[in-house]
Amino acid sequence: MKPDFNFEISHFQSSNTVNGCPSKNQPEYAFIGRSNVGKSSLINSILGKKVAFTSSKPGKTQLINHFEVNKKWWLVDLPGYGYAKISKQKRKEIIDRADNYFQKRGIQLVAVFFLIDIRIKPQKIDLEKMEWLVNNNIYFIRTFTKCDKLSVDKIKKHVESYNRCMKQKNWNKVPETIITSSKNKIGKKEIVQKIEQLNNQYFDFLSKTT
Image: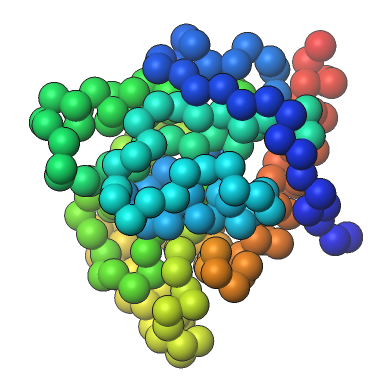
């Protein structure tokens, strides 16, 4: 079955705290990654319209941004991490905002698409963040970005290298993985199919518990 790419943004909301996030009982899919990983470009590619702010300067997203899609589910654009051109206090505030969202959002947060630049060797900050998600029982999908910058062989080698690194750091199981390119629309189908699958599971669960 082909995924439905006909997306309408039915509502938008920015929140400073997790308590200020939308109250509708709808599934959410959060996108996060280091600054300049291509998060905004990927979000725009998935939704088929320019809704997330793209910039050559990292750190533009600082709030929890909710995009309601087709009055059914939310795509959540979270602040990136790892950028240096802001104060330490501001950086901590932004990181805490995202972490509080992860820890307190509850069952509405169905999955996290954890973005990684496929061209760059495994970074300590990414590995630690993924481990933090596991320790907090948050389901995530490892999502490599910018694959159009590499050949097919190099993509395979980079992913295999990343897998070896994670196994060396005592990961028992390599996370689910999607390879993407915003420029060439690679991975869009897989992401949308995953969201549709999880949406069905979420609403099926709700129907059995209400």
